[in-house]
Picture 1 (cartoon, rainbow, N blue to C red):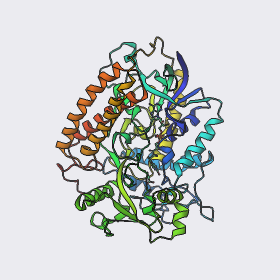
Picture 2 (cartoon, rainbow, N blue to C red):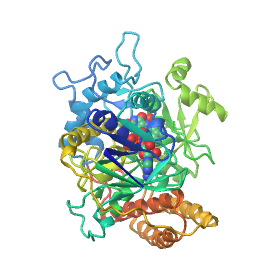
Picture 3 (cartoon, protein in one colour):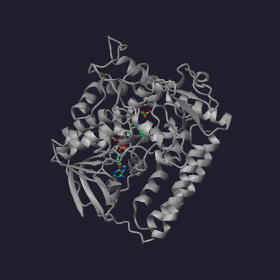
Picture 4 (cartoon, protein in one colour):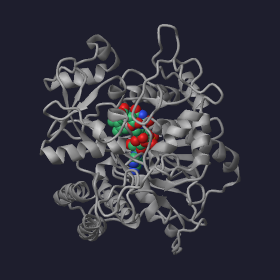
Length: 530
Ligand code: FAD
Ligand code: SIN
């Protein structure tokens, strides 16, 4: 069975949906997504989207260049590894792209005067984050899907899983080097309801598969975040970089047994919330002059250090001194969620712990979202554009996704008519025997990978820990490659394979970085002096 399309999109978060709306006026769009169409990291975004907007309540903005401070904050946070051309491009595009989101129907909160109501998060020197209460991602996803549904050129298939991108390798050509002449012809896609694998031929393909928080034990990411796109591109010998920079969010709700962890937005600290140890003492002043609003890497490490010294399982975020009605108005989702476990955030301190949250690295792309593989684009969290460097500034990722989906869309529109569909692509032919009982091997291996990564490749690393993680993972890799060939293809075995691949790249690139920088902190190298 095979299908043909001008634009194949893998993933229906903010990156995939934005790109679809861009290219749909020019050709046929086929979008596949592995769960319900709205299930994505995007849906759970809380704090908002950082942008420079006219008509907002930011009186501190530099009047000669309103983009300057946002650019400086992004570069400062990225700890020397941001690509400044990219930072300039993304931040200066922010006004247009966020205005477009609003025109597509995303409602961002406004003041009674009608200006955008801007919030502040860690690493930002001013208020600049547009938001919809504390459910910004849900609102953006809703608005974009609404637009998608009314577009006649877009076909969206949920519960369809991309297994591999198709390249020369599938024509029997041995592609050995990670060179630019590897070409993408589409993808093999499994219908999760029937189990059948289809060949989807495409002139251009966009990978928008999101992040990989599921590689770790404690994460804010939903179960879809298994790094599939990154693993597919790596297996196809495409370039993947900066994978050592996994961002841990300082404050996820401490609620043992709950997975994924519920996020407590950084905007609560922007609103005046204060981090305290269990005995009620403030501690951030010991680590950074910006205290609770220092960049994430610093705050997460500070919490980790306090927990290790005290032996406590969590620290507190204290909002009890803030106006309670105002708190409920700005953070209704968090207020309700905490009530379900007996915490009234207007009266009680919130127990919080760091959790794996955002992958700064990914599929290397240029300014047009082009990967190192011809006719293959990547946008959103699965990509590495150079914007974030060694540490992402809060609320810059939704922004990066809309800017790069726009850029990639423009490039694909200008070029897709020159591309022919590839002929003679073989049907998917990896068939194992039915062995459903081996599910136990898959579920236990996933837990083992997560345990290895959280124990040895977390907030604080060392050469010995990384070496141990590498050796343990190698055994799991070998076992799973054998299992993958033997048992009936399933989403679970593919995701396990992807998780192992992504964990391997994180460890490999972490071992190659012989310094402590940004999110990669190792006790073997002193932190860089600023
Ligand atoms: P996603 O939104 O994750 O979408 C990925 C899509 O790909 C999904 O539809 C998924 O099902 C699909 N997919 C994956 N693999 C496959 C496959 N093999 N086959 C088919 N489909 C597949 N960022 C901010 O800027 N501001 C915030 O306030 C903010 N808050 C956050 C809060 C939480 C709890 C989390 C988890 C993240 C937050 N982030 C925030 C980060 C931000 O939400 C993400 O980086 C961003 O939404 C990623 O968008 P995306 O389109 O790249 O990927
Ligand atoms: C948050 O709301 O704290 C998350 C923001 C982000 O990850 O950018």
